[in-house]
Length: 628
Image (cartoon, rainbow, N blue to C red; front, side):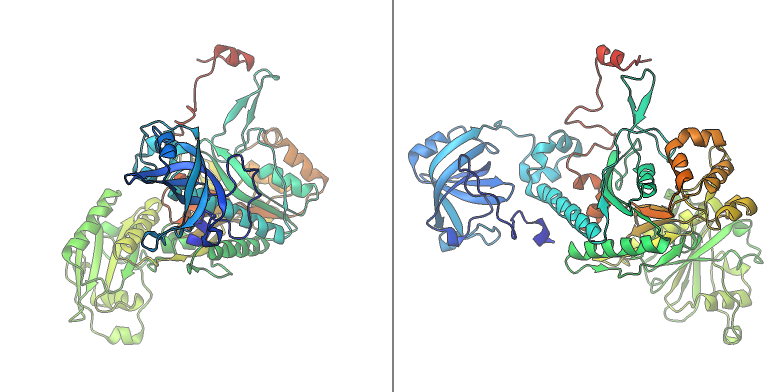
């Protein structure tokens, strides 16, 4: 990764400046330049006075060069100059003594012997934090002085890296025949799943623009306009709370759309671009080769407990509800039961299992059950703390003939010898294996099982390192029951085409209708949602009618799109991988704010600029607003 994070320009030389402030950059000089005159400009990184000789490290966007001041007059001119002051220095490039060569620096074999110095700007004597240690400073202070934080080479390099990723994405999209088109920032409010940022209109009393949550309608209108393949690095604005992988307020995505395209057409573009990007910007990282796995939503929820599975974790969840249907065990009655088999786990100390039980109760579970198969005897011992347990297939004849494993613990007495054999055979339990049980109501059991799976993977060091494991989650339900209203609502994008089109909407139970909706997931992070779009007015009207929208409301909310579809719309599809999350994953960062030049804090505040802030009464009057 170091190659991509270097300040140096390896392939292009900079346009030569006129020499007023600099003739070369601080990352450019090499032994081949020895004897040449050069003028450098940049920030004072360090100053070291060695009694008669002063050493100064000068830093700019491209790197760092050591400057040596032998002349007493020049040293006097630097009196009062502190770190982070800005200087322009003229001197001769000379070789360093062998014992002072710094192999960690690209310029570490040379130094500049100063002949002249000009102080371009003084910095305050005291800085809010040491520049090179800014990442150790509390986040609020870093963001208030973000311009100083960004001078830290480690932080600076992340923004350079981001720019290179964006340039590469543009190159790949153009190679696939996509045309970059910018869509409006001021637009109309629409129900797309999050709160809008509203902008009052000065000219139109009482009317508001909205910042786009995504260029959704505009990119569909571009397809209707006859453009075949569109993309842009699109800014999106959503009034949402921050998370580690979600910046509040605004974010950027690689937004693209294709005419006359199927779901698989979109997947092939996404696979190619994501695979090329992740292999280009990682050193030896294992990246899922195309085609990426396609995992139906319901299967993902069952096997991984989430629709954002981290496939670096080898653990999978099994459904044990049917297995316990005829077992008289009160804790599992009228409950869904899941199981997770962990190989070679039984030998762990009791404290490991106790900590897992503690974790289960912390996340809201009533407890966590587990069965361990003895490594030495091949028999099984069961431990539980308010259990949960497995489903299994019918035992084969060999399993039926085998002796029942000896189970000890609260659950054992509820399992007959036949059920014990069935459990062991269906899950291929072996000596030293542990089977964990999760049991709860349908609305919670998958979520809890997914959290236990993730925690086991992390605590047992099962997560594959240095890998980027992709998959598509497909076949999302078109509708769901809204938790607050209890009514039918769109699960994902309301503009998606239902599978089965109009016939499905007219004949099927809405909760059984699947949509051509999909997500792309990498290492448990959702990079993008996408869909095959609903391009037919009759299907769109019916789809919105089921979700409780009257035709008049649809016409009011989406006038341009609905009107355009009456004039011949091609089938089209697309998606929009999140740029910030792509860069976050590539750099191995856990906080998305680390890869954004000027992020808001977790409370959606820009403490550097003072946003959001108050405005004057005159400004409010101009846009016809009165504060209540």
